[in-house]
Length: 443
Image 1 (cartoon, helix red, strand yellow):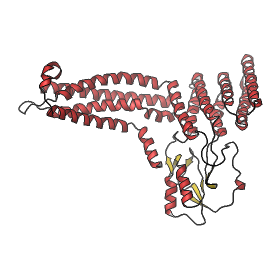
Image 2 (cartoon, one colour):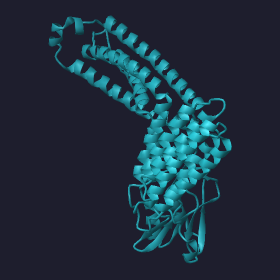
Image 3 (cartoon, one colour):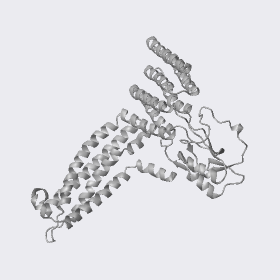
Image 4 (cartoon, helix red, strand yellow):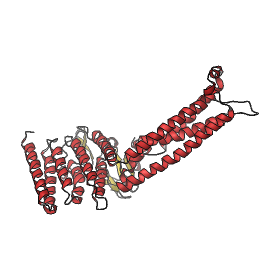
């Protein structure tokens, strides 16, 4: 199952899979229409001579023109797509390229142009004239005109789509939407059967001593996903305990520990194969089980915007706004404990993300690059206030309080203008008062 999900993720982010399906559909459509032309009565077409009355030479010329035009447009479309990818990589961050590649609009456009070309070639091959018994698939030829008009509309749509998709607001919103879907999927409420307080890490000293057998990684790469159900099934089947040695999003080095099993003797090859099959390791991170990677993309864009060479405070402010949207969605949700129980028996010890780690991932580096930037610091204070208002957890509010103190300390060091300092201090007092009201509210 984990391999199927991994394959599905690759297909969704490929430029060839969906266009290939569209090309295959165009081939089937061409064959079907040619068969309709060859088997059906053609008397009714005589009533529409201007629509279905083209001869073999005229039909060939029109199909060749449409096919050649679609080839040219296809090349222009690929060029525009590559330019957009280059601009996004250099202006924002290379980690957003997978978002462009998974864009359904671009994939469909590429497939439509290739499909129209393929359709015209198939129909063109079926036309016979001259000394041969003449056959002109009139319905198929007429439909090629409809496809050509659709291709023009598609090109106009694509120009608008690509111009919109490379805007900072569109890229940031797309990354945020993907991350929010991951949050909804990973933290829908209460998961598993163990304690659910992510703010209190388990006390390893209370767990009984065990004899751990280590399973090594077979390749280098980032841990994209883990099939937790498969780990539970494996632990139950072999009456053992599985301990993850690497968490989602971490880089795994070949021949280093991937997981450990509580066994008295080294595990047999079957158990090792089953355990490795539950892990998905590749050259890059994905958001499916790693919402921290979505946060990482927004942080990278903010850092690029705050760099001296770019100095785009507005884009950085937008990143902070959308980071607050992600953390606000996460703030009231339960994050599973790293201990997974089944029927009261400890089966899996996992490595998971916590609210504190995600907040740190979101704000620490941006804060470090925003020295003296009053707009960013004020917006971060607004974000902390918004997030705190949505959680009842005292420990999570404490994490946000610590972030606020770090921002205040940096502001005291870096804001030189008395006017800006006064403006920041006034806003800081408002946020402190709001946090105190939240603390005082009954839980």
